[in-house]
Image 1 (cartoon, rainbow, N blue to C red):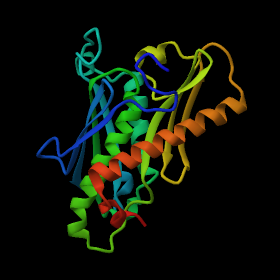
Image 2 (cartoon, rainbow, N blue to C red; image 1 turned 45 degrees about the vertical axis):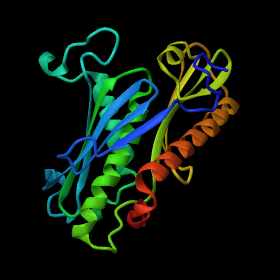
Image 3 (tube, one colour; image 1 turned 180 degrees about the vertical axis):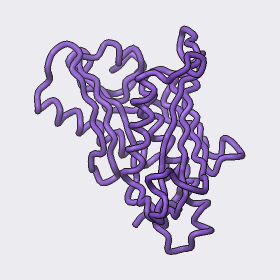
Image 4 (spheres, one colour; image 1 turned 60 degrees about the horizontal axis):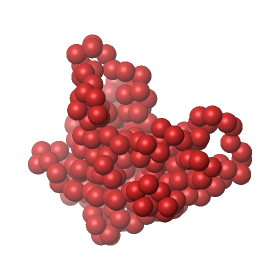
Length: 246
């Protein structure tokens, strides 16, 4: 039993509030325990130069942490004149993860911008952002479907992300900050509903880990992804997303 009472393969309490903002095409407030992220999906006409005249669209993401999202206030990156390396890494992760399950050629010459703003951080902000961004994207695409027609299917699969690690010799799912800061192995996994891997970011903090341990970590991560997708299907989409998946 972990400090917060969870089993080793149990995610934190998950809550997703859809339609949290009025203006974006899709928006959610997602929380894993104390970690809370506001995710929005906006649809703009036009595409970057490298996609012009292709007939297809583009998807990109931005990520930020609010100054008071952690115990000590951190200054806004805009005031420093540039984004930090961690911010750039995470927003690229979000963008390429979502592009892996979107058929960009189906979008027309439109750009979807996913914004993920961390309101409160207690570990797992990047994986929460991927999960929230996917739900916000799904909501935005359901709106766009009324324009594109009933046969329009821009998604290839459902997608979610979760953290997993080895803490005191035990594999644990969905690490909070305290667990993450004491982990011997820290891994972030992005996976489709069919168990296909989109991204694996794994690091040994103290000692190398074995191939067998990695398989165990991925097995537990797959359970976490399944639990997240089951929640979003039951609480948010209720079968509506099926109409978008080819």
